[in-house]
Structure formats: C-alpha cells, structure tokens
Length: 202
Image (cartoon, rainbow, N blue to C red):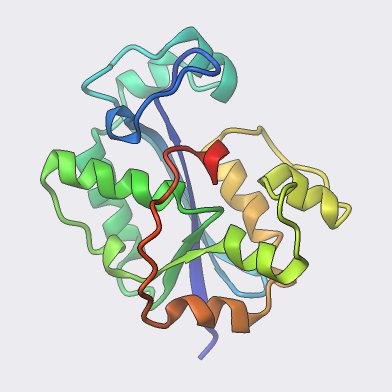
C-alpha cells in the first residue's frame, strides 16, 4: 500500500509585525490540508476558515498578511467545529501528518488544550518536514518555505500566508525528502528541547 501523508498548514490571529505574542494566545483562523503520497501526488484536499473566539476581530496587520477578511471568519465554524470537520475528513486515511516546522503542531495542541477537546487527527504521528528537508539539504539558515522552494528553483504558487496554498506548496517539496528522513521521525524520541513559539523561530 502506498504510504500517505496529510500536509497541514495553519493561519492564526496575529498583530503588529514584530510584536511577540505567546502561542497560547493565538487562535487558528484557517486550516489547510493536502492528502498525498510521499512523492507529492495529491489525492484530496481540505480547507476551512475558523472563527476566533477570544479575539474575534482580526487585526489590520493579520488581514493584510493573510488576505483573510473579517467576514470570512465571522461565519466560519469555531475551532472545535473545525476540528470535527477535519477529524471526519481525515478518518480512515491510515496516514501520518506533517507540517513545515513544529509550529502548526504546537498551535493545534495549544488550541485543543484550551478548548478541552480531543481530536482523532492528532493521534496520527507528526512529521516536521522542515527538519527532514534541512537534514537532507544541509540548509541551516535559508529554510523557510519560500526559501526552500527557491533552493529547488521553484516559485511559490498561490497566495502566501494562506493555509491551503502553503500546504500545497509544501507538498511540492516532498519529492526532495527521502523516506529515511521521515522514517527517522517515526521512531520514539527522547528530545526534550523547547519547541518554537512561532514560525519565525523555527
């Protein structure tokens, strides 16, 4: 059976550029996922806006950065409802999930804890695709998503800082990551290093 992976990206509430906001205060406002094989062949996609509750009004900076409008989230499902949609979509996929860095995984865990809910999606093993790519290419500094695409002479397709577009572009990098690097992360680990607070710190 072909090994499948769900590549996920999130967008979250954010404020003035440079302002440090703990991840515990951020709220997911968009979920974008792509189901594909490890060669990047797409089988299905999932996307939904999410309505923030603690800070329901998006900042002008957040709207400018992501292009997500207030009306997009005002009528969207809450985080709990959005995760139910994701759980239903991902059910019986028999896969793992991955993201470009650990930020998205930590944000989901923070939201699940704050809302006191469980998710079958989060029972799947998580793969840090940025770490796997970085180990493969030995690129230590220029390893953001856009930089990784440029490294392979690829240009970003779609709207940057939109969850589904970021997930789709991450999928394009899978063919450059050997399975051995993914398999390495599926093994038990004793790593206790502190995860990043935002995408820029990864």
